[in-house]
Length: 120
Image (cartoon, rainbow, N blue to C red; front, side, top):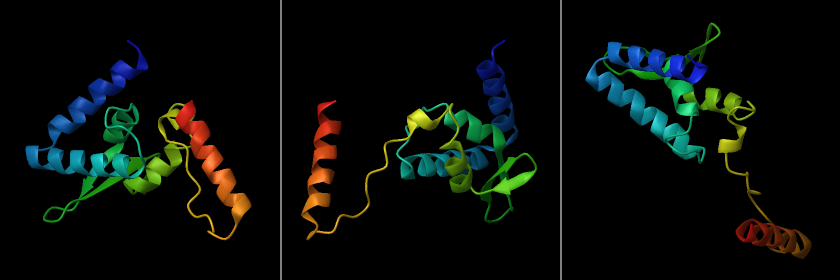
């Protein structure tokens, strides 16, 4: 069986062990982190995150990732996966955050980059 099939079975078994409410908490948290990073919900990264997820706490559960003996937040793990060749293509190109309005050269470069992306 291929690696993806094994991972899928592992994810389904792990989520099946959780109660329905716990599964919803995990799903919503993963949806939120994928949205914040501009990644689609059906990205293979979702299975990776679901296979490593742990819920900490009972009354106010917190979703964390257990990876190689480390406990990470979802955002920290997604930042690591951003550099993983298996998942890097699922992230959008990061735009320049700010361009000074009085810097004409930088403004022109920014608009040229936007134009190139929209034409490709």
